[in-house]
Image: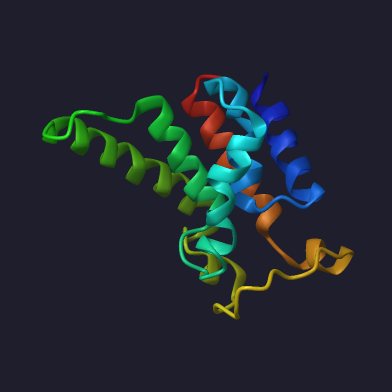
Amino acid sequence: MKIEEKVAQARDLFKQGYNCSQSVFCTFCEDFGIDFETGLKLSSSFGGGMGRLREVCGAVSALFMIAGLKHGYTTKNDDSAKANHYKLIQDLAEKFKQKHGTIICREILGLDADGYIPAKRTEEYYKNRPCENCIATAAEIAAELLGQ
C-alpha cells in the first residue's frame, strides 16, 4: 500500500471511532502479521495520551510501537543497539514535532487530563480536534519508516 493509502486508512479508522493509537497502529498490523483485533487491544491503552492522561500523543505512541516492531532490539545488554533504537525514536519524535510542535497530547489539544470518560464522537468533536492530522502525520512517518 502506498503512503497516501496508509494515511487515508488511519484517518478512516479514527473517523470510525477508534482512538489515535489504534488508528495508526492497526493501519500497519497486516505489515507485521498481527491480526486486527490483537492490534486494537495492544494499542487501546495509548489513546488520549495514554488513557486520557494527556501525556504522549497516542498516534506517536503507535509510531514508536511500529518502529519497535521494525527496528527494535532484543538483546538485553546490547547498549549500542539500545542507543541506536533510542536515537531512531528521538528522530521520529522530532519529525512529528516539526509538524505539530510537540508530542504531548495536552499541548496539542490545549486540554488537561479531565477524567477517564472519553468524549462523544460528534461532528463538533471531529471539527475541533487536531487528532486526525496528528494521526495522518504519524501514519505517514510510519509508512516512510517501513519503506512504503
